[in-house]
Length: 398
Ligand code: ARG
Image 1 (cartoon, protein in one colour):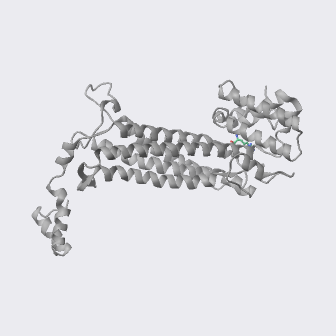
Image 2 (cartoon, rainbow, N blue to C red; image 1 turned 90 degrees about the vertical axis):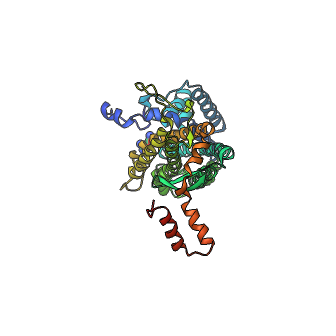
Image 3 (tube, rainbow, N blue to C red; image 1 turned 180 degrees about the vertical axis):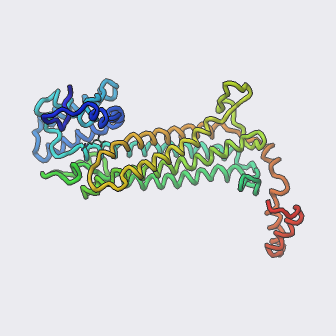
């Protein structure tokens, strides 16, 4: 049975063991490749600082690269008794290299190790999300080009308000996503600081080169203060979830619009059959499940954001095992956010505009505000013009 890194001369109660591991060993399969990469760079630093010899470094690097291939081929699994990917990596190295493997943990702790692997993963995921946002924005642009001229009655209070067109509507989402990209880039800048070398949260009592590892791992800078570095686990997750839920927020609102607009009685949009799912009992149904799920993924992101915000609530400085749970939360949200971006791209490519229904929606009252302004242009004071048109319409404010 694999040894824990902290194994001493006692045996952990099996119920406690199972509980503290939880599903961490499964979740860590998302992290392991980043931890291997960081371990290679860490070993390089140990060589540079004279803590290991050249041949020891070569062996560590070679074995870590071999492990990376196994991981990529899905031939390596973190085992439950390993606890986490950090232990699995060190155990693998020790199994293959004996004493040399035992040197890899010089000048590091699992706390800065997990921080490093997580930040590498976050940077990767944020890059993917950025690309997916770009692709969706392009699809929205194409939709707008095709249908942008078509005017329809826009709503306030879910009641007809004023004319608008599909260009303004589609570009509203495009602009929102542009702001989301700005938020994303700011969050990525914060995440792009190297935590490696902060150890358990109080530094390590030997000379290391943090700038070297930061640069080699592609981080923009070193995050200096070890206590703050540890504190930013939780804070950054909260920020990430905020950023991801801004994206799902925008998609949620447009999904709701599409559900309403494709309702037969309104009919501005046509959801082609290939975007609709059916009912097991009502043969006539063509349901917008896809958009309903996009909507619901936003609530899931929000609840994850609350989990991130509250996970660290009232914790004193320093590492706490509570943080372990946030890995699953953030990874799940990355997955969901990528999924809704992908599916909304398909929706924008396939959804159609019903020009006839749109033009029929532009009934007299929808132009009331425009008529007020025709009078304003002729010199009538706004409030008088407003009242005159209201009277013509029967006096009721809609
Ligand atoms: N699985 C742990 C986590 O995600 C790794 C760090 C463990 N550190 C510790 N001091 N027990 O937080």
